[in-house]
Image 1 (cartoon, rainbow, N blue to C red):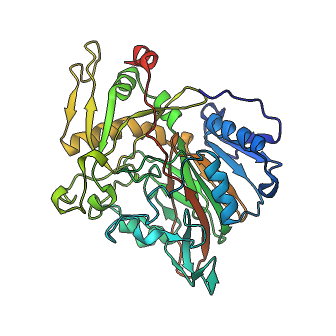
Image 2: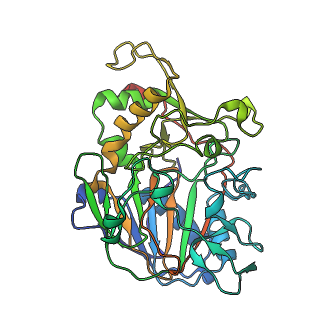
Length: 399
């Protein structure tokens, strides 16, 4: 593990959480950083930022002026060996059927940085000629949708809880940086879970929701912690193409099992050696904590190591039934997105958020009208190796 240095260059304070947030889950989750100037940053300052990010999972910077080059350099500092955008520099592979295709516009002079948002940008912007941006809307992805009447009243959903990762061939990025260029004003919205629990959150228009993978693991009962530390998740080849005709659950935490996934033989060409099999829990390189890290939409199989004394799957095995895979993951992950555990970023222009992509899940929310212009720069870089899972001590403690 990396040595954690004491902060010396900047000041830190807790991120502004909602009134219904449970302070217990935000003692270490999230910090606002004051005193950082990207035009004057030094290697020593970036080392401090890196250590603090791994300790706190989210760092928020206010009122920054940040060029795409500076944003890339900040992202790159977390892993100097990484140079390609997290989904590859062509973002989605050689097909336009990927569900990610409409959402990303590559900045030509800094191809690791994407322009995302909503609306028509007038004129040439960062080398892009009048780009048309499209904010993801749950009505294009969820099986059951919010009524037009409720949407007019400001009801929204988590679009898709996820990790920024190709989940095929490329390793998940260590961090993602999100920089707010243009943020439209709007009324508060109600993010509804619509899963029979009555759970809901008050969120800003177009907020980004984050949940800690550490909290998601820590809140589990012992039998599910045992299962989590023993399980490896196998993802479908080209998962965003594979799921392109499927529908999500109302919570955005996974896919409904309707048999709408593409057959593997109909996918773009793929190789077994490039299929991702990742531990369910990823070990934090600074704190040593376990973070429950699964992209539920792309999961295809579960490989479970045996543990004779375990309450669940003592003999281990491979779970291949897709509905069972999804039901198991939902049971494990749903407690971690309960309203008291969610941080919703209320964006203002000049905000930069760096988040530990190997330590949390996030989701966009909200819906914009076509004339509401929203512009963000996003950067993440495919890691040089896959995340590290639980060690022998973790297995002894939890399995």
